[in-house]
Amino acid sequence: MLRREGGNEKVARDEEWFFGAEMTKSILFKAELRNLWTEKLRNLLDYLLLRLLKDKPMHGYGLLCAIRDRYGYYPAPSKIYPILSTFEKKNYAESRLEVCNGKPRRVYTITSEGEALLNFEEELLNHIISLANVKTGRT
Image (cartoon, rainbow, N blue to C red; front, side, top):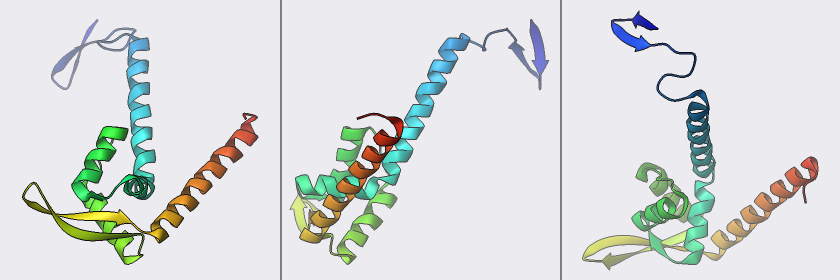
């Protein structure tokens, strides 16, 4: 059946347009999972940055790339650098200028206070997961 909507012609079928209903549900479900994943990572960005700094000292762009490569999430630099600045103010990380490939880079290193915070956050996340598993009957 052909109908006219706002000057555009569309084919109306019992199924979704172009894709079958199951295919559309699957695509929408995958998109929703992707959005959920991105939202969770965005909320854990402070933790992810500290976790990466525990592995090795890194500059801001390196942290950005590591998050993208490891988690498939590309946070905006406008999100990363204020967090790193806050880490320095709260003494969770310290930085020093280094020249990498001829470019000056501010390289961040986690401090003992930052490691203590990271350990606390990991214990907290594990506790939340264990509580969720108890409520659902999982072990």
